[in-house]
Length: 257
Image (cartoon, rainbow, N blue to C red; front, side):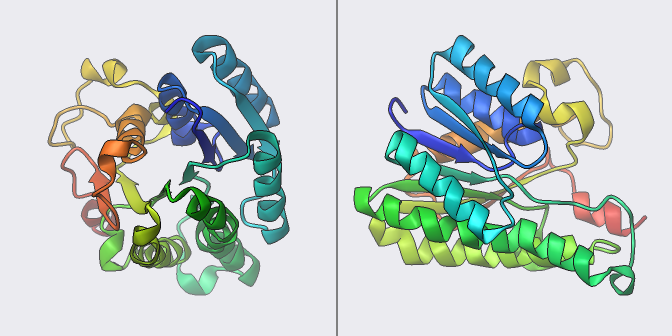
């Protein structure tokens, strides 16, 4: 991955941060975008430079706003001259459980723009650059079973946006296959709190009876799948939706609550 450039939206914290570590460890230059987490973003960039000796850049911008997306891509191209990996990690989530009729129009649009429209804004700018090199890797993040467009009680906006994102992911995979660009989605299980930035070894000694494999999931579990999808050897994998749940039926359990 030497000389390749990865763009990770919302990469200052959580799974995005762990993904940045993983790709940097393979030699990729890292660009992370952030909206509010300036302190964390700048600290991460410095850490990546010092530990992995890679180029790293943090850019402020809202991945749900079209003009910000255009500006973000322009800065990356002016700085690095290329974008090889695009990981759309950014995506708002409302923790409050509410029925669809309880959403305000502002909340609904915020969820749609952050999870679905923002991906359109970014990829529309990035894909032409990937086509020129006839190579690229695009990865989105979904939720368990989102490829079946399931109902998710009290999460209507998030579920609708991510289900739409799944369809768009698969459509782009078909449209861009002849251009050497693969497009896939990974679907993390119930990975919460500090586990989003944790390494696998930290979870090995922990027990979780609700997960068939017997331990909590971590950000590294997701990041290592993303990293493989970015490698040359993954070129036959496109249009895939990959669950990373430890065998758990996440959505089934949630909808029974």
